[in-house]
Length: 449
Image (cartoon, rainbow, N blue to C red; front, side, top):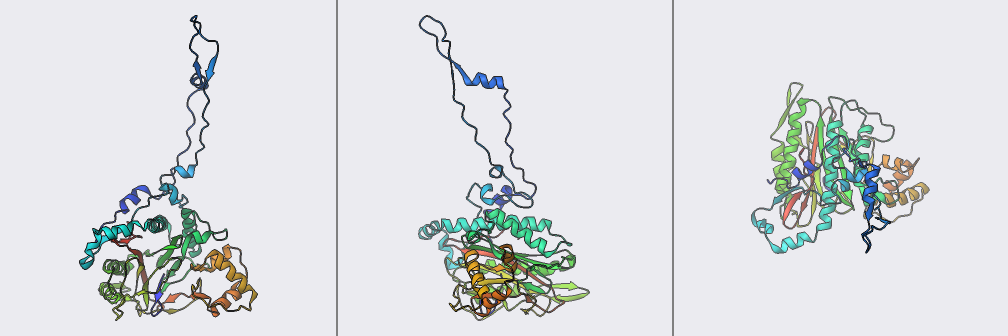
């Protein structure tokens, strides 16, 4: 998820394991094999001759062994590969864990001691639950996006694409989110953003949207997965015309640069300068014109705290004077945005993304629908972001007046789509990183990006 300005080199240890454990395709779930022994064999196995008596005569009675009841097998628990579309819970594929680690990168320079420090290793071991939840969510994200990348095609509606991703996330986390409080335990950590072309972020279809993906579109796919509020925020860009390859390459390079430069005690200004240098070394040729790829300077990465996708720190993607440092134990979304337009976005189009503020005011609500809606938002989402389709899914009707009242009262934050000038093209890539005491873990890293 993008944060707007002012408000906000190692190999992956777990990637090969994840790739071998999980591949897209039809689920090859084991079926219970029928007992191929015939009845006469069963009878023979069940009966056991008693020893003879003192006269050498065999006893006339034969003991029967008690047959152990066969355990019923659950086909879902026997799956070894993911189905298509993804419906097998990741917890079943990995028997509840451990889940694959992301890319673990050793710290450099004055922080190099952390890799072997016994004190830091002890602190790292104390974070087992935290790591398990993050790695679980990251594996869900990898499997869902792998399916999405293989199956999203021009001609599909944005609603079809968004619901395909979200249904898969809910199935793989084991949280459908229809029972009160279930979505707070796990599921969607951020609504599926499907921002097209000049729109850079925060666009997802509302009810009734009939927009169809076209071959010439550049689409940012940005969604979050969470377990117990540990949000994995990761995004990629899809295009279906090679003319946009350099735009995507520039932004991917910039994000990888930001991930590489990030670390404990690193200043935000240094990260932003490195990202800008990487991205703006590219240009893209569109309709016979060589266009420079510009950083969208008023969009940033951000830290993530439990149940809140935007914390208090921003990670710039251009050179700034911010001397704030990253610290041990923090979690960050490193995301970069490139554009062939002005490199600056403004609010535009119909709002779809919302989130209840963690520090929202306690004010009287005079609109009755706002009071009931707030109660539902608090019980089903807490401070996790949601979109209008999620309210529709819970059965809410005619809620816009109440929702707008919550926004105007400062209780709920609205996140309208963020767009550059029309006719331009934008791209985004994003990873979630954990600044562990011993190593930096790019928890969302996969074979794709």
